[in-house]
Image 1 (cartoon, helix red, strand yellow):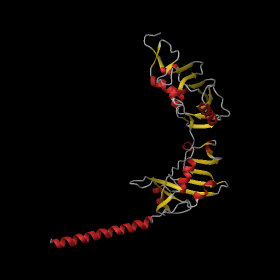
Image 2 (tube, helix red, strand yellow; image 1 turned 90 degrees about the vertical axis):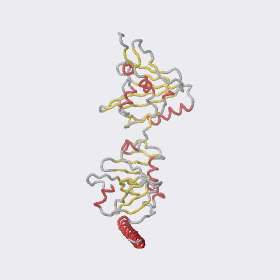
Image 3 (cartoon, rainbow, N blue to C red; image 1 turned 180 degrees about the horizontal axis):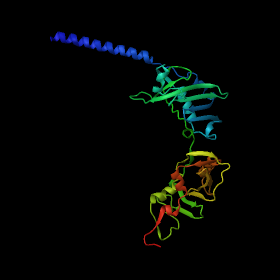
Image 4 (cartoon, rainbow, N blue to C red; image 1 turned 30 degrees about the vertical axis):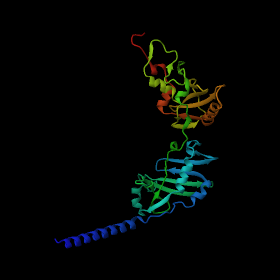
Length: 344
């Protein structure tokens, strides 16, 4: 082939590839629509103060957040307080939801994007409904599969308005969880281990275990009145017993009214004068805990305020903890120390 023939063939090939690519792009554009800057809910940002309730649901679970004064509570979790700004963050994400491009209108394709109706077989979609005080719907959305942003792109969700047949890809900061536990303010107390001076665990059988350390600067705790024939088997386990209240959160909550507390309690006392007493009750085979805080007379004002905050948050409630936290709160001497070989 001559040089001139080669270059003619090269140009023809480039043009053919370009034409094929352009045709494919046109087919793609016809299928998914064009890029848009349209907000999904253009009026929502001006009506956020009207919102009285938010419902999130999928085919298995649901949660309803209800405005209560300056905050929010979880209706189907005994109206327990929701996490700080969780509801407002969700509402702002809905108000900012911006369409990137139109997707399929074919119902048989919705499942691929996870925007099928909630009652469809094996549905994986979620629905968010925003209501005003009169129960009027301010916004409603089916939320599907998430597309994580790459190369500077923002995260996005496939979404669909329930009354419409068009699915969209929308730039999204939504986190539409549907289980109540994900929205609850799960904090009970936050007493770091280095503050703890002493822990006294009274047992149902009348026995007692006391662990303590002599100074706040110390790292390791000791068992008070450890029998001479016994030795601490695991210092980590002993120290963990004193650290149970550090960032303590619950797994379930219910009103404390009607619960019968056991006589045994666990008491934490800190070097700066905070005292927290944990009571225990069993119901339906599960262990529940209750919390009462007090400040010793010489405690600083911030410690007195901390005790008041714990009482205000936890006073009317009973909490179920993770199993390992329950074990820490009710440890016995035999859990931590063992008889030495040769001792009687």
